[in-house]
Image (cartoon, rainbow, N blue to C red; front, side):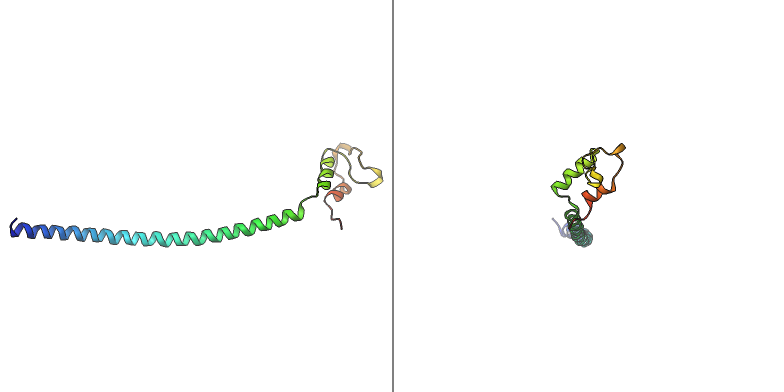
Length: 114
């Protein structure tokens, strides 16, 4: 290999190195953007998980507050089958006319009892 070929080889190697360096810089910039976006998404994901947890806790609290006892569930089932569960005028167990709603029955099932 003569001096000219050696010099040309070095120039070609320099061009390739510069091209590779520019590719590395471009990839590095893209990687920085990806890492930044990933960090943003992780933070957003954490906030969404916390928000979901809060909502689930509220719903759990609401369910616990509105959950019927076993006896009230039985009364509700009887009521849905068309029978009175209230004791107004000794109507307990009698058929509701045309399955019309009865506020007294609903009070027995869903009303506050202290």
